[in-house]
Length: 309
Image 1 (cartoon, rainbow, N blue to C red):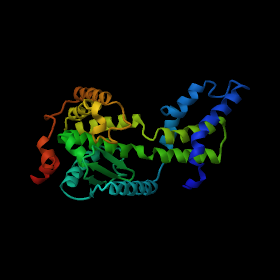
Image 2 (tube, helix red, strand yellow):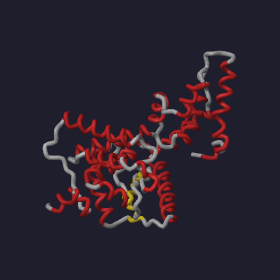
Image 3 (cartoon, rainbow, N blue to C red):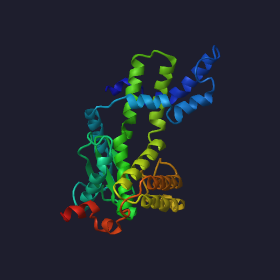
Image 4 (cartoon, one colour):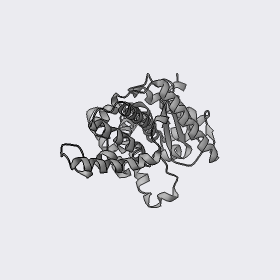
């Protein structure tokens, strides 16, 4: 895609307000045009995606080659940023192998598991409580988050959350928006198409992280870890722990796994509600696994089973 075809950033910022004035001027001539109510326009520009926008994003395909190229650029940028902070990133070792085993446990539940047959795992040696997933299949976990999890069940929920972002293509949303805008710019056939392009452009900058995506990722993390025999209530406890420390959040290394996300209390309650539903639908044949010692020893339940063969 030729990114030079898009307008400069300052113009992107000003454009919604220019559009608002243009829309109001047009409405003075006819009330049949959209956005007769400015509040509706702002909701469309800055609020959650409409059903039509979600459908358009869903239909917009990104090839694996394009995704891999984007992911490689994003990973290189992330690694350069960590290097500038003097944070070492590991690609092998006990922590990496431990997380790889959890990824291997949950990967079969992904809808697009055949697209992401090989997932690279890295560990950043930092007390920051963070985890990130990148297009193409790279996950970076921070040591602080591994330790904060407290047990393997909670960590499995986090791994499932990050795999879900990959599985659902959440990181590809900006690229999809650009594809939609490029198409609408090349053949604007209606006022609504023009406004859709402006809405997508605005949301690229105002909503780079979507709380609805985080809720979906939480739900997948809970469902997949439960199906794998883990206790999702341990993930809920992690959010309870975070919520109890909000008054001193500035002094804690909580990072993007907890930023631009739904309220911690909301997430905890949603996880417990989903657990109850899953438990009522199909009770596990065996007691749900927690695995405190497994986390301490960095030796997963899967690794234990493989060692016994």
